[in-house]
Length: 452
Image (cartoon, rainbow, N blue to C red; front, top):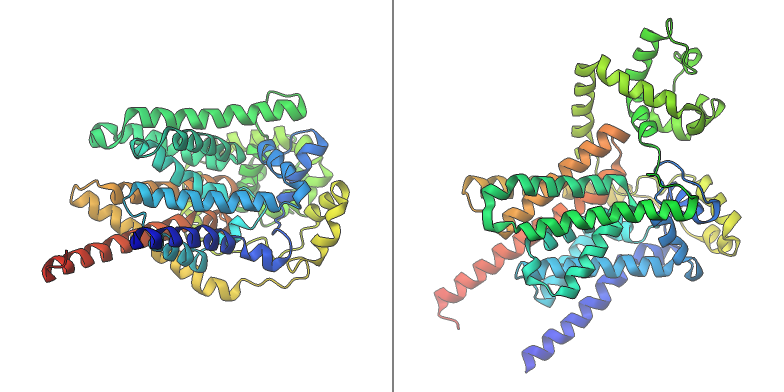
């Protein structure tokens, strides 16, 4: 009875402490953390048209929390994180409350996790959805029907918030189908089917939301523009224009020797992109250049893609975009939610009081070391032909990180934000491996001492 009371107390401590610390950065800031992209998502409800890379599903989710100054959104993100963390530990047989508490606190201290859950952005759902898919596909028999249904909805929503997240999840399911003959009973076909259906549901959710807000049955636009930006900073666009402008009259030909150095400067800075009509004026031309440069320079494209993937794997610093002037987001909040202007302006973020230099002295080496640990776990398990739960989790995380690096690095170009939003699940996996190792050691010591 005393043991049960102690466990109950520890559960309540974990259930209060972990979510509270997950939104500690926002509480300290005095307002939810913002990003440049936040304004684009918020505006979807009010403007009623589609813009590149801004999910209407996530826009509706943010609109739902406006009345609470978005604190309800942060509450959902923190509680979802706590739920997925404890559920992962539970299906792996590591559900002791104190273990959940110390693993959760270490993640909060050493990774970007609390900054992600404190921010009005899709990034928190990227890593959580990978863990949710792992549980649903590989451990569905260990959870209740209600938990299965909840995971299904959570994965669908996460897939609908960002195309890169959908791509990573779909890639994991495809790898599961390929590995099914090798792993046999370790991967249930029913679990894979549920995973694929949840992702398909997310795609339909996005299409339905796009139609409800804009009247169009269309996917969120912007894929060609983002890919164009990456090719521009790799020098491929300039080469293509120099090779073809004498024969083809592109709108960008007069500017081919004055292109910005990066895709971000071209798409979101003060550049000729604005003069030429932005996406509405240049989308067809950018799409044409992207597709034809792939055919014209396959070796150059392959080299650039490989370089971008490797760079993206190493770009894992916390806080990218949080310390910049977010004029667009500020303008959207002041225009459509003026009642929140005072709180927003008074926040530490807007007063430039946030600095991630000291944070990343810890976060970056932890992230890089965690990826090495996860890769080692996968390699050791494969070498031993021991595909246990930990090896399969390491495989899921490894391929998720690789898929994320390929999708984000190759299409958008390497950014620290894209790495930081997912690499914390590698640290979580490393902590699980450490917990299991020490638990086994304690068990062996107890056996040696004859302790019951």
